[in-house]
Image (tube, rainbow, N blue to C red; front, top):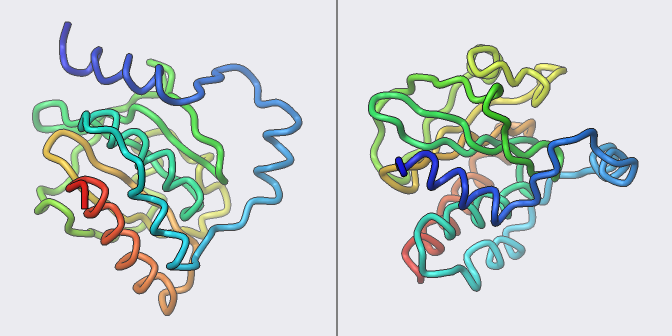
Length: 178
């Protein structure tokens, strides 16, 4: 079994992977969704994580859904990254095979944050629905050698800098069991 198939099975087993049309309850929750920005709440991001690195990464990603407008969980595949899961307005879902468009991203150090315009990246992955209004910036964070997160935020720059610092510190604590 190759690493991608293994990771996909782990993601599906951990995340709620309702691949059908979202229920009215989910649609209402997405409509009323507001990003959490209170740094005190970020303490919970890194708490009670499993020891297995794959499970830890998936759970961290699902918890980030409360702190960003949207996100994509990426798995390294040689020189490219393959999307495995996404969240949008608080709802996390596993991507279907047809939705997994591999992309190239610049090399970065672990836990560094790269920022870019969201629109071209979402177009490459054919996930434009994650920012239909074009209001977000994209943040690329690589907490591990074989996985990374694309996080999309509509927070103003004034708040985004502190928000990202607090989030990356929480991710670091979670990855390193601190």
